[in-house]
Amino acid sequence: MGSKFINSGNSNDLTAVTDGSLEILGASLGSQNLTPGFPIKIDAERKLYSTALAIADVVNLQSELDATIQTPYPGTIEATDFKTDTTSISALENKTQNITAVSGTTNLTGNIIVSGGTEQISTISTTIAKDKHECKKAGGVFNGNSIYQDLIYADDNTGSSNNVALIRYSADENHTATERGTDIGLWTTSRGSTVPSERLSIDADGATRITGDLTATGDIGSSGVNTQTIETDIITNVAGLQPMYFGPSTIEIAGNLDVKSINTLTKLITLEADFGTPVGNFYVLIDGVNYRIQGTVTMTYGIKMGAGCSICGDGLNAIVLFDETSRDCQIKSELVSKC
Image (spheres, rainbow, N blue to C red):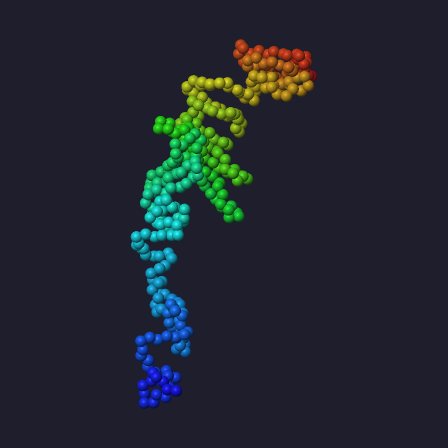
């Protein structure tokens, strides 16, 4: 059978078709092994086939991509806008959930809004020198509301990060245009504990409260202890008898001054229980101690004097009454034998 495409002296000669030397010129060319919509490639046997192109199929494409797109990109990217699946960079003032820390310094224009729950929203100024912390709350903050907290976290031996200390600023009253009382508290965690506790507080009136021992290497105040205001439950003896100096101003005490003992040789008695625990029907007094009666003291037990001890009234209003409803109240002295 001859070939209609071969214009040679012998139309029955098909050698040019089989040896690949045939030149074809036509308006269109089709093939049953090609897939519509895919580019054409040539395999190792020089056969045509259709498939998707890879980056390696294009000369220098990978190097060109490496030179323009890197993570992180070392140059400057300029664009009208950048969009994610949910929001755009131009709307970051309302979408800040996914800002993460990167190495180096991140500069932001405007304020960083930090949500602290329903009770507070703090705004940290981007100007570091001002170190400005604002508490925004509809209707103003109320007494007891936390205004700002500086939380300190540290990792334990399991790798868990835990709150170990904090500084808390809170409202001491409902804040208005003319009233803005605040408190400050410093919290630390005790040894053997995992929960921070308040150690130091300064309230709106300036009163300072310390939980725990107060150790000072010098004077407290400009000249010894400032005695204008001393607020305490108990003043204990530290490392032996310690002197306490007051003056030169007059000391005024609003309320009762409950002093149990002036020193080891004097004991003040304002109630029967100040004598201690009775033995049988008597309170046994300590040798060499002077017991000073203040006010009216009603006794339901007798008194047994120790060697060298004494009882006296601390003023003209000192009275000792014996209630003998339950027992016969007697006063006995200790007998001292002499050789």
